[in-house]
Amino acid sequence: MDKVTQRVASGRAEIDSLALPVETKTYKPVAFGHVADALDDAMEDHHAELMDLGYTDTTATYWLNPKKTQMRYERTFHQPHGLIGIRAVGQTSSDKTMPIEYGLEGDVKVCSNGMVSTMWQYVSARRHTKFRHLEYAMAAKEAIHNLGPFAAQLENDRKVMTERTLSDDEFYGFLGRIWGHKVIGSNAINDVSKEWHNPTREAFLDRNLWSAYNATTEVMKSSPMMNQRERMNNLHSLALTY
Figure (cartoon, rainbow, N blue to C red):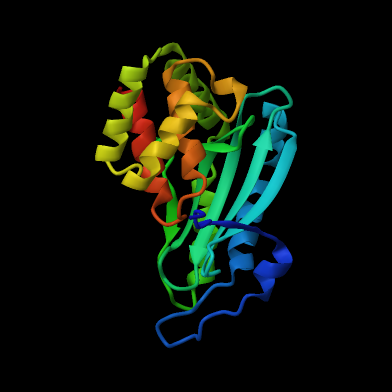
């Protein structure tokens, strides 16, 4: 049986064409495009900082869940010769399954796998009133900060994981640990194991914690958007303490 794709690449035209839920006295829906625009505005404030840090390569990507009720917008910045880029994220839903959230992640250049630092948390805009547009704009600006220290922290964490060699038995221990902490479900265990033994990319042939981490995040790219940030945080903490 083919696996169900939990996220589908989209574009701005489709995003703008999606109908909003009905507004009520206590709930005011926000268009997916407006959530993305707030992230763009926040990143514009950091244009000079990004240039000073050498981040010149930029991509913008929209993702939807199969029902088109959840949206994730990513702005990714890479240095020409860097290994890990900066990914700014805005996400929301039209069915109240996800709040409007903004945050920073890492982006492993060779594979676009995600990476987080638990020191940089997502910022949510939870109100559903007519003033909500003010709150999500502020949330986007609050979430995007200290880009230089953020990138340095990710690089340091990558180095720690790269220097930690793993045998197959140690990998199995790591796999059991992330399953026990609900980073991945039972259905994903075999997929992560296969990715460890036969990496999709040569960059992860080395038998170390960094390869195990990316075997996991490679599989997680096809997982549902809801609660993924929490699971990524758990993965990062578990890897650094393994």
